[in-house]
Image 1 (spheres, rainbow, N blue to C red):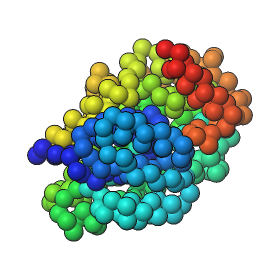
Image 2 (cartoon, helix red, strand yellow; image 1 turned 60 degrees about the vertical axis):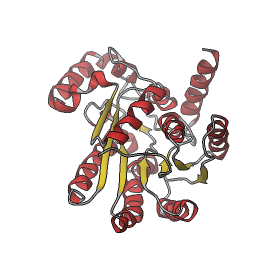
Image 3 (cartoon, rainbow, N blue to C red; image 1 turned 90 degrees about the vertical axis):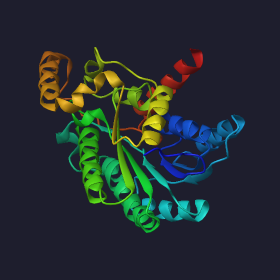
Image 4 (cartoon, helix red, strand yellow; image 1 turned 120 degrees about the horizontal axis):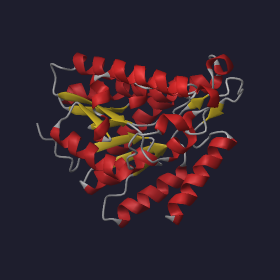
Length: 298
């Protein structure tokens, strides 16, 4: 089934930067009516200006912090009020928490990751999918990560939250299989974003990117929009990594070997617990700023 995106009402979370920002611009070019949500209001206004400057319809700006319980449900109601309906929900917002488990435990940093990456998508599904079922049509796109298949020391909270999101995405697809509501999982591998620059600050994390293709947000967005239009169930990007989806145990075996080889470069006594994202810790903020400067210079 081909999905015509012109005039579709779409809510995108985590739209102020990275993958979400690129998706918003690509969908706007298709004539979609967008509501873009994130924590950073200035970045959302810049995105809206860029979209209108390219001839698209100005998106609705919804400032929210999805790391706080209850905000996702409020976001859904605001999107419904502004758009009239939500035809497509794109759960893209994501944050990371970098640190060893004996330092992080179940602390606030870890809980923010799960509230943003896992519970908020579920809250938005609960708020919006019933309306889709009443209309008999709709689409949910959950942005997980290939990190669900290949984690790394210090990155377990992000990887496990995305693994959990992948599981509920597949479950939602099964639950809706008798309806005309589609469910798609977008599985990015390494993509040149501010988040990638932050995650490189985790203990020994530079090794995880060795010999892996690194994609761009613009190319990912083009591929994702095409997949949405064609009704695809999953999209792995960069495409060279698609084998990882079908050979997960081999991927984990190779990852374990890489960790063993990199062992001497991983300081297990590193006590740091780093928040990522626009409200991240100074180290993460510096990584984001360095990334932005490098982009401007290139």
